[in-house]
Image 1 (spheres, rainbow, N blue to C red):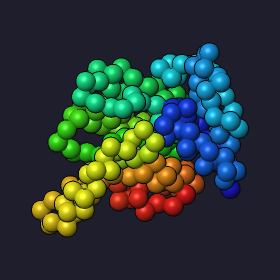
Image 2: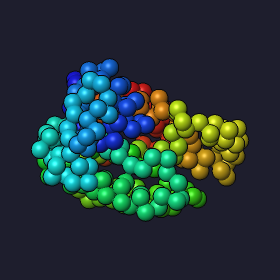
Image 3: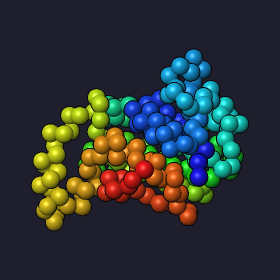
Image 4: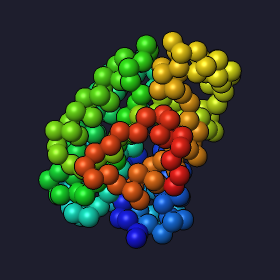
Length: 216
């Protein structure tokens, strides 16, 4: 059965891949873009013009049977962007969750981050706060927690793969290495498609091993 999917961040690194995958599978896709950025929307999707930080500008485009996919966030996260994680990631998530709850959206899919982790504390805190808001909303939800998504322009961690391989084979470090493991862009897109096509009864969290094994 075709899903009706509303996406924030649909013009980004993960968003474009997911939109293409959803379109290939026959789903209806609407992408939120700012005024003046309409041409950035992926080909074949419906364009909704609005402000991702103001739910009132896009709530009218939501429907009760929708899946809401929240992808908007700071590109190339780093410790130097701590303030942006609050001003962009958390602020947009809050607006999306409030609009989705008000309009009775059926399923909210949120891309968070693997946690706990020894670095990127501000990033984890902002995403964890968004997770709490989502839980408090009562919406049916899927939360995905990747650590780093490998793909075009995001390839430097490939050098760490031998380290991960070794850490996953030591009992003392196995769980942490799996939780903070690397996933590919294709794996991430497939996991998101899977989450949309097979929503949970009430809620679920997909950690890195779940993301790797999902098939869209």
